[in-house]
Image (tube, rainbow over all chains, first blue to last red; front, side, top):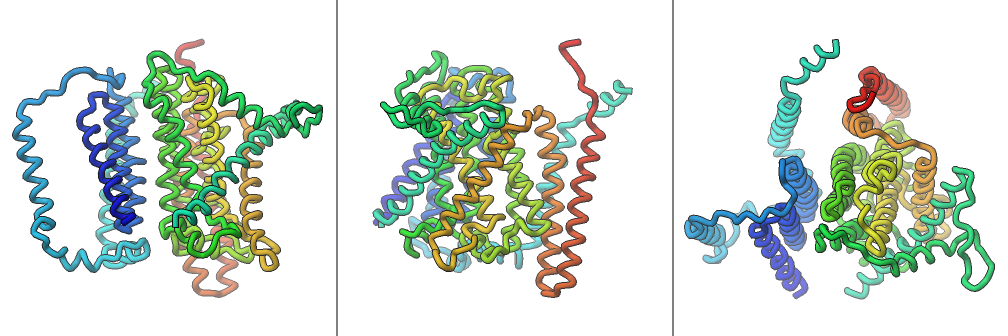
Length: 173
Length: 378
């Protein structure tokens, strides 16, 4: 019973957060509403006993992505936060159709009351099991992902440094 | 169930809020001593002349804060201006329940409600939310100094979170668990992680990064009074300001508590076999020892410049903590061999590696510092 109440509260928080995030014209308000959505989602993961995923949801989405979004907004010129321009809403009917279609496709297994696939049933979401899985069968995948992220990081640093560096040294000499 | 939760959480809040009051007094007294002043010494028992070394000062300050006028700037975002101090307090309070404090009134079941398997990850995830609160305060105040303070805070906290987490990784690797209670249990009997070369290096990195995370001096750029007049809480007064103050100190307790858990053996100490409840006392005493060091550093070190701050995080702490992970990995394998000779050799080699790496990085960074350039002044 407690879980059901918690589920409804968390779902309401998540859905409301998502709605506000989409509807708010003030960018900073929108970002914080998005973070509320992420927090609700993390609570739902916790309810499913997937505590590691819940923690990572907070760590990556709220901690990193949220701060990144705020940074991007602050680094954009002429953003004071409140922008009263109306959002263009042409073609909203097509958007609605796409959203409903996606919703139905995602929820189709639940509507038809199909059992979850066997692979999903066998998953133990505990931190220990996840660690063993990551280090044993999936270690190559993990390393490849790490390599990709490192490459992206180095690329970002190189792109940010640009061609400016040698010029500065010339002027120094 | 709910009663047990209350028994587990309410004392935590009361104890740490009381300790907060005491710590503000301690900090003001210690800073005054360092600066050859007396510090608060008047407020004691009301209606008498008993001063009690000014121990009543926190209570008086609290009463003053509550009755002070709440001023919100005209251009401010009222909702976010109100929410920011609350958002600052919640994560630092929440994180306290991940500390493995064995209160005597807790039985086995109620303790386990909080000590999740991923407690250390949760700790870092939730303390990261402080950044958002600081940014929210800076942005909502609609004041250029506040915004500057908020931006500085975000940049600083994001940078220092990386060495903070990487130095904690070493302990997690050595114990093989993310559970705070198990980490504390692995260090019983004086076998603390700080007493090994890699553990000591990790502890120093962790402590410095923790100073930066909690915006303590010498990393108090976000609230630099002399540059940006208290930064993100310039526009806060009254109880909202008190909430920020409380959140900052609770965050200090929490991060010191994590440092105690990870490196200083948790509640481990002499006399535990006779009196098991001493572990709480030891835990709090170790937290206070770390707080005392923080106060001492605040009284002695000048504030860093922004470029020094970023350079220190990315060019010194980050490479050193990554190297330390490798050292700790080799040391773990050496310990598995269970050979005294090999262990001694590992200690000597890792000490040499870490020392030379630290001094080498220091030299490298020092060489690149140019003489100060004045852009807008001669």
